[in-house]
Length: 305
Image (cartoon, rainbow, N blue to C red; front, side, top):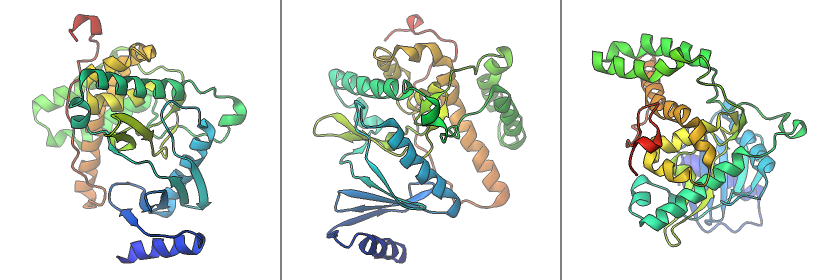
């Protein structure tokens, strides 16, 4: 047991003396902001890795309390322990890997698409009454159209020196809709997950169903297209098209979702360029991605499938 694990386990034993700890699993590498300790495959303790990341854990607890229990997909219960520490109940399963999803039969894929669509539909439809959202912040991914254009200027300065002419034009085309349509990024803010990556979608291979959605640390008010864009980036357009049968609003903001999906890798390239300058590679990761995304502006009835 390493020093960090020992420290966390000692804390849990002291805080919960009645807890009989027979099995401990730790994850100190995957999360960007927190360390995870799983006890007895029953409880998940999340510890802020840095002083500034305690806010993510506090936000996650608040969001889970806000959304309640009435969801088609299970959301873990959350209990604040103290500043920068929270306890959640464990959900059995594994990340919904792209390969896992597309190795399912057609009917099972449809069921998973329906599950995800209904979850997002329910999340994005939560009434945002004043008393419920007074402490709710914007999702960190939320940016105005003007801010996105400023971001592109930064990308041109930081990333383009490492690009060939083809890549530069490819990236310019991603931002072109924002230059041509001043209302391209207009939307009505809703509550979004903000980080709906495959490893936050827990899948049960015995039932071929999603058993839970986790990690609401980045959740807040934002563009519903952003959640769809993350799914688009990881599972592709054909799968998201399936989802639209159950969450029809997806069609109305499909182009924004495509933008978010396309721009995701570009933002990562900007982060890497910053690392090259600072020589700080603490958060460097090699992403695993596939592509099945139509160009912005493509209408689904123009393509087969």
